[in-house]
Length: 192
Image 1 (tube, rainbow, N blue to C red):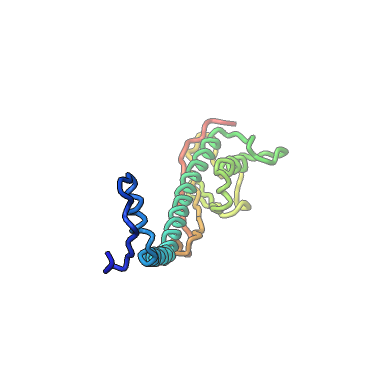
Image 2: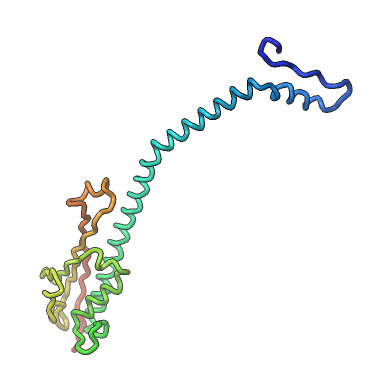
């Protein structure tokens, strides 16, 4: 043991049952092996920080991409639900959803029903409403008979766009905008 640089302590007193304590003291109380071990641990900790600094941005970007794609799919499904609910409401001929209580219009009531069912996403996706392939780009173009009359088949379609927030994902879409279409087809009931 003297050749390795470790100075041995005196052996255990004769007849003592605690010989392992003397062994631990003999091995771990020498200063040189402790310094070398602590230097190696510090080097390993430093390399772990460097590895984390290299990997963390990639993992974070991947997580943000997953969250954004989840939002895209959630928005698509939500808008599909909203257009279906709007069409279901529209076939009944009701007007009670129109916020203008003085002069309620059927087309405004249907659009309000779509907005109410979209969980606040209607304004974010800036939809263009098409009814039977006739596009209505703005609210000023809406007409009172745009959703057809009693017994008519109505194809209600929303052309939506979702701006991508992640620059890496935005490169995969034209102008960084995900465009999607949701639609519902129903026949109007016989209403007055």
